[in-house]
Length: 226
Image (tube, helix red, strand yellow):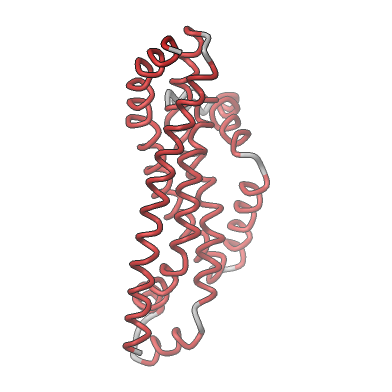
């Protein structure tokens, strides 16, 4: 037991540092990029011309229908066969961004569609253009509905970044694997890594609840004004 506690304490700093330097930046970068890609994809599918709608649908179909791990392998290990060489971290960013973009596009598409058509008509009636109506009227209302599912996507992404270890990104889980390779103590180290992921997810869940309450108050204020 004393040996396990000592190993736990000695490895804690290494795992936390890997999480701080790689896991958290990878999560934040890919979520922001994926959210932008998801918004673009959703708007394209709702309002774009047919050729672009077909491209957007194909992208979502492929990404949602294939495992994320396979996508990472194709990007990092497969693309060099056609002359495209990527370092591990950029390859992970691309892979996770494509995945997040596909899933968030479905969320955004659904919440935009849920906004009553009367809101569009009201925006047009006061002289707004399509872009103004979307940015000032539709998206603010859709954002309130989108917070819970998008927050769940972000929390899932934190855990999914452990798959980046498969393409040699030295994030939290790979740091644990490297220590296991020298200490031969997989049980204690993988439990330690799991608890760190659990702690990060728990903090994000609390932030999600706070954000949902704030949006609920904002929504109640809007309804009272109307």
